Image (cartoon, rainbow, N blue to C red):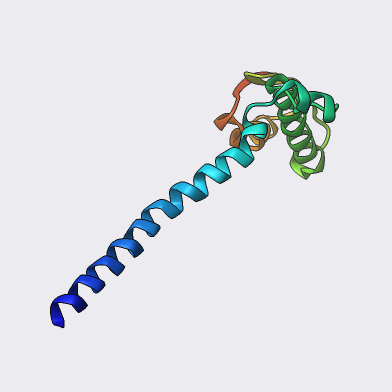
Amino acid sequence: MSGISLFVLCMALAVFTGNQQQSPDAHSSSHDSSQSPDAHPSAHDSQSHPVAQPTPSQDQTGANRRIHDSIDDLMSSDPVLSGSDVVVAVDDHNVTLTGSVKSHVQHQRVLQLAAPYARWRNIVDKLKLE
């Protein structure tokens, strides 16, 4: 009797373990098949969805605009920069600072406000001290 019980227990364990191993694969394969239209757009998808996903250049342009607006807002609201004339230009590689400042303190403050964006863009300092 104990031999049969042990056999049934082993079979149940094997079935349970087999289901556990197949479950992620079955889930991922059904998940993959549901994701395949998004991962590999077909002609049918482009016809049913006229609004295309943004291209990398469009994403980059949006990022450039956000960086520009953030730096511009920081500089326009900073009381240390009162009286300065700083123009911010952002492209895919650089944040270019042009214009004029009235003191070394203002110059350093502009660079300090732009510094966090050096992680994504080169900071190009073309500011002139008046």
